[in-house]
Image 1 (tube, rainbow, N blue to C red):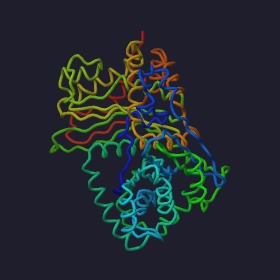
Image 2 (cartoon, rainbow, N blue to C red):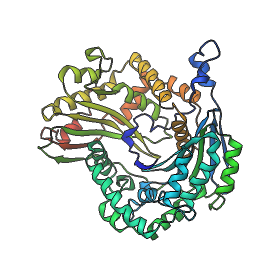
Image 3 (cartoon, rainbow, N blue to C red):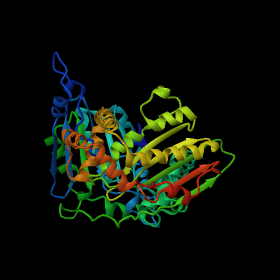
Image 4 (cartoon, helix red, strand yellow):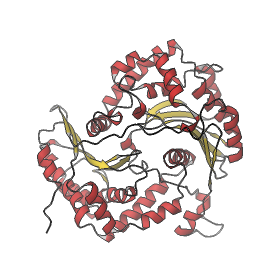
Amino acid sequence: MMASRILRPAGKLFTKYSNRASSVQPALWRSASTALDYEQAVLNVPATRLTVLDNGMKVASEDSGAPTATVGLWIDTGSRHETERNNGVAHFLEHMAFKGTNKRSQTDLELEVENMGAHLNAYTSREQTVFYAKCFSQDVPRAVEILSDIVQNSKLGEAEIERERGVILREMQEVEGNMQEVVFDHLHAIAFQGTPLAQTILGPTKNIQSISRRDLVDYIQAHYTGPRMVLAGAGGVDHNTLTDLAKEHFKGLTGSHRDIPSLPSYCRYTGSEVRVRDDDMPLAYMAIAVQGCGWNNPDNIPLMIANTIVGNWDRTHGGGMNTAVNLAKACTEGSLAHSYQSFNTCYKDTGLWGIYFVTEKMKIIDLVFNIQHEWMRLCETVTDFEVERAKNMLRTNMLLQLDGTTPICEDIGRQILCYGRRIPFSELDARIAAVNAEVVREVCTKYIYDKCPVQVGVGPIEQMRDYNNLRSGFYWLRI
């Protein structure tokens, strides 16, 4: 029932842009006899209510009247807020939260959650740490109390810390076997080299072996403060009740609304590459990216639309040559790849926009040529028809990814941290509608055309293009 997982930027290609506002539950889409049209539906959604407590903590919720609910704590801290010495402590602390508190042993915690029929989970990303619970609506008070207990009163026993070192080290071995995780860690390490964003979420082995109880306590005191926390709820959650629960259980948090910390130093971007050649591997795992933009940048939506135009593809997908996605059509016709995924990963002040792909060693040159051709086409000749199709796909993907109380709760927590409010989907829809082909071309030219990329290759990558050759492909002579 209780687990710990890592949230990687690549795992959510569209949801990393947190303007994924209000979800529409199935019952809200339809009246008793007829379905609402799209314009009515995006307006006919529950309101997201927000309250700021005296200690700076924010409480936000969307009450849909569902019989179940998700409540969680979104904390504005992750591996980006660590130093080289304590890199990995945020993820280590996430593990320790489930190992018992001053009033509950690990066994008591597990039994209490299971007896409620609830689900308790957590994850760590580069900028956020999250603890959340899924439960029946009537169990929300107990779920909030449990969340407050594990975040504020974890025992952090020495025996549990030593035992968890082994668990995390085994988790690191599993991550090393996930080539997509490996490639994206390399991608961040070279794109933001010498900055906090270059650090991995799990941290290096030497840190895991040396992190002490004092390191964990210091991290909690420095970062688990009221202004950096959001208590979010979705489903059958009454906002006034949730606010009262927050006042009761989190009154010990320090800080005020004036103490919101400043962003860590700007994470500069550096165009570069890394090659990990292993000819014994059957396939090459690669990624190419350019610097993207942050959450609040208005260029984000055109970049998301461009990302949707490039699309995602797997050789098991149907459609063949009839697909409307140009790069997918080229991959199908020439058997250029096993799969590819375009991504638009955003952070507070920067991002990565690019593509991850798996291919055979003899196909690398042809595939990269087609990728660059498609990217240059976005800067030069993308059409209004393509943009309109991508806009519709983007709207659909965003709404589908908000199906259920947990993704809605996640959306609320992330948006409150990033924007201080939750942007209604009707507002987001209007922003998407305002983008046309000319805007996409201008924004893509700004971020792609004649820019220095980052390139990562793992496996049999003998044909991986020389960096200078790759860089020259980001420039077309214009007439």
